[in-house]
Structures are given as structure tokens and as C-alpha cells.
Image (cartoon, rainbow, N blue to C red; front, side, top):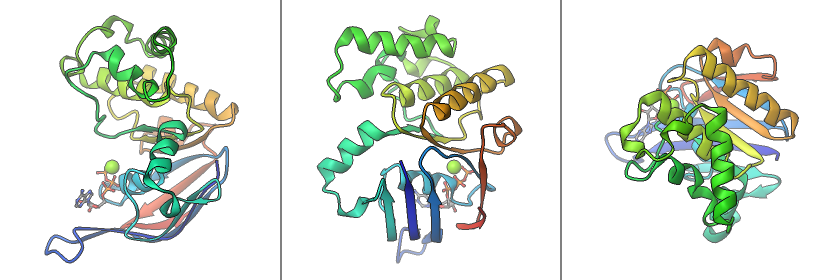
Length: 225
Ligand SMILES: Nc1ncnc2c1ncn2[C@@H]1O[C@H](COP(=O)(O)OP(=O)(O)OP(=O)(O)O)[C@@H](O)[C@H]1O
Ligand SMILES: [Mg+2]
């Protein structure tokens, strides 16, 4: 799905003493089936940019469109539906539910889509196997390690087979082998037609042959694209 941003600005706490301009008039076009890396130092606006593309919150000003549809014009109900069906978001801070099991966290996005229980479990287990966390299936997410949480967050984002994958520093807590497993899967999904945006500094990501473009962001502005 084509992603288009036009003059996108995001100001946190606008009008307050703690006001921050996180994104400053961003123009960006990411073609359907692109696989791009978004790179920039801490605080440069990477997570904010992904959140706007992922419909987590709207920009303060400017326009964001996916597949030719202006997100601001969609009623909330459609925006929620779009997010559930079209977006797989791997959050930098995971955003898992600590009291729920690994299995329930991973299969949760399939509930509102009406996927039957047996298929939910089967899809979740396929991803657990791929990321070697099947032995944690019944553990509450609040009782597993950082790297395990990262893998659960990856599996949860991919379980609904979304056309757009937004991955915020997905390898930050993974060792080299698991980072490679992640990038191999991304390359496969890219070959299958997905549009993928990954924020990272990790050379395993930035130098991966499947990455077609690196976008540099600095102080909320795009520098090279
Ligand atoms: N919820 C928020 N409220 C206020 N300011 C915020 C909020 N989230 C981010 N910011 C600020 O906006 C700017 C951009 O933050 P963002 O999280 O997008 O950066 P980032 O590039 O993802 O950084 P990192 O590499 O550390 O994850 C930073 O100055 C940050 O402090
Ligand atoms: Mg971030």
C-alpha cells in the first residue's frame, strides 16, 4: 500500500512550556511494496513518524494518506478497521499485556477479525516456532525476558498478515541469530508484496540486501531519501 505524507508536523504538548516539535513539515512518499529503513539519532522523530503512519495518533497539521485515502477523512470506525487489518506495528516498548499469556498476546489481534480459535492458535504457534519462543507459550508476558518480549511483539504484529509492517527498532533486544531470523522473514514478506518500514541503527538491518532505501531523519526533518 502506498504511503504519502505531506507537510506532516507533530507538536507534542502544543502551547505548553514542555512543547516539542517532533516532526517538522515532513514530505515523504513510500511506494507500495517498498522496504525502507528509517534512521536517525535518539529523539529525531522516528517513533513519532511510525505512529502517524500506523494511525496511532494524527499529525498536528499536514496530511497522511494510505492507498490514496486521507486518514483524517476516515471516520474513527474505519480507521480502527484499517489499523486492525492493514497495519502490523512492532512497538519500541512492545505494548504487550503483562497478565496475558504469550499465546493470548500473539493471537489477540485475530479476535476482532473473527478468526476461529483453532486457526488463531495455529497461526500464533507458527510464529512462535519461527522465533523460538514456543516454550514460553503459556507464560504471562510479564514474566519473560526482554528478548522474549521482543519476539512476542514481533509475532503479534505479524499474526494478522498485514500489508503494511511498521517495525520500531525490532532488533534492539535480539542477538545476531534472531536478528537474522527477523530480517529473513522481512525479506520474505517483502517478496510477497508487503510494504515494510523499519527504524534501526543495527547494521544487520541497514545493510541488509532487501532494504531498498534508507531515509535519514534529523530533528524531525527528512535529510536524505
Ligand atoms: N508522548 C510524548 N510527549 C512529549 N514529547 C514526546 C512524546 N513522545 C516523544 N516526544 C519527544 O518528541 C521527540 C521525538 O521523539 P521520538 O520518540 O519520535 O524519537 P525517536 O527518534 O523514536 O527516538 P529513540 O531513538 O530514542 O526511540 C523527542 O524530543 C521526544 O522527547
Ligand atoms: Mg523511538
